[in-house]
Image (cartoon, rainbow, N blue to C red; front, side):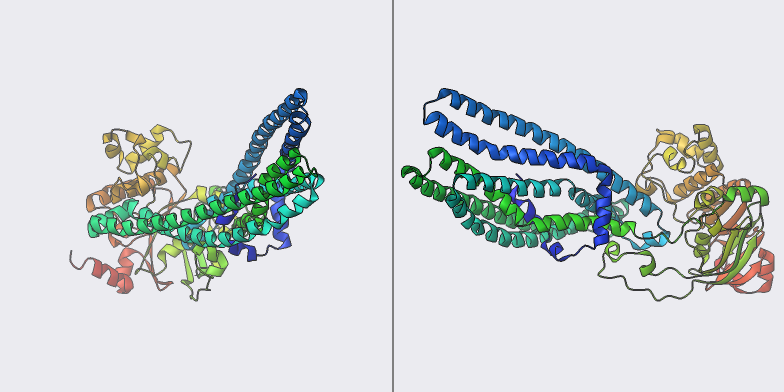
Length: 619
């Protein structure tokens, strides 16, 4: 029998939610691979509920036919039967729990893999909007809630319904009068239970909110960047006092929640005791008058213990069922988001095109605006009431330029001009609104994303590293790379000496987001990762931004060697790093303002000259 309080910690507002027929069909579709196991699961629950209803009948036989008639044989057989039922029931409980766990964990695995696989295929715009915590909640909390629809919720509903049916049938067969008397008392259980359920729901929601606030404080303060900010600008005593207030609120709501739960439990226990007393009294009088036997009275009171718990639980069954199904719907909500960047049905391998034509790059008449929230996001993942359409113009307008195979073209211009946006189009984080981006003459929308990732390598301004070893971060680009190849890439990035000096060498863990390394070291490790991948076309987005002059000079020499016979698109704020580019394209307000070599652009006296003069005015 399910614990009585389980159904009263759920949000009762889900009962107002309505699921469409198509959603229910899809939910049942998830159970289809496990229909055999679910069938056996339901059979075991039915048998277990039936066996539970037999035990009081054996008590009646033991008292009326054994003790009352001084028949030791009946006493032994009835007692042995009750013991056997208990053992069989325990075995069935273990068996159906094992089956439930197998089905539930398999369902969780399937859902998590499906959601994870789908989410990682979403475009960059999706991740730019969605809160990471909301996404993780879908993979954890909502997936677990969905799993309960086919395990604990299904088990509780079926078990409680069958238990009530069996118990009422057995009671009515012995005394319909006392059975009716027992049912008259049911509202005394159910109505307070529903009231307490509403109160517990409100308190539980408030408790979850307060715990979430406290958890968010810890998450922000305990991250490396957050801890650094607190130590630079914060005050430990003030931070502790602030968190202490949050902890006090959590503690107070916890006490209130525990008190309500205790009142509820004590109230039900008291009412159950009164019900037993009434049945004992009424049944005892009938037994005295000879209308009932003592065994029947004992059996009826035993059945009462098995009746009120399931009835109380069933009074809130809608909350439990809808909570599980709404969790399922929230998972489907993510799976129904269509990625805006996908492979065409006849997409071809870009590597074949590069091998035949060389890794040239071309942007022709490219216009681009960032997608709106309606196009790529969900309000629930942004944790807002509704997704409001963005009103934004084009970020790029009629951008055209060509990077011949083996050449280096630099993009320069003021901040916000659209340089990084161009790099994201080249790597197909987004598709252009109009126009075309080509590599080796092939429209990127006509090639597979897998082959594009093999051809193009990127080092961004903020190089991201995983909380892993140096070797693990490097092998993210080439999992099959040998240690010798790792060291070769580190030497080319002028980082080998530093890694060799570390006690764990390649096994050194870089920390969260690489925080155990300096900005320049992280950038060089990211460039080493690029060199290990050895792509045909390289995109460097402010790749030397965090390097000092000495490191920049050493790394620039390594890059010059590594970029030989490769096509390079370099976005640079430091104009000193692009003086020798084959072509410099000046981007301003999403348009190509100028193009030419360093000397040509200086002679033209335009925006490039202004940028260059401003940057080197004090040198």
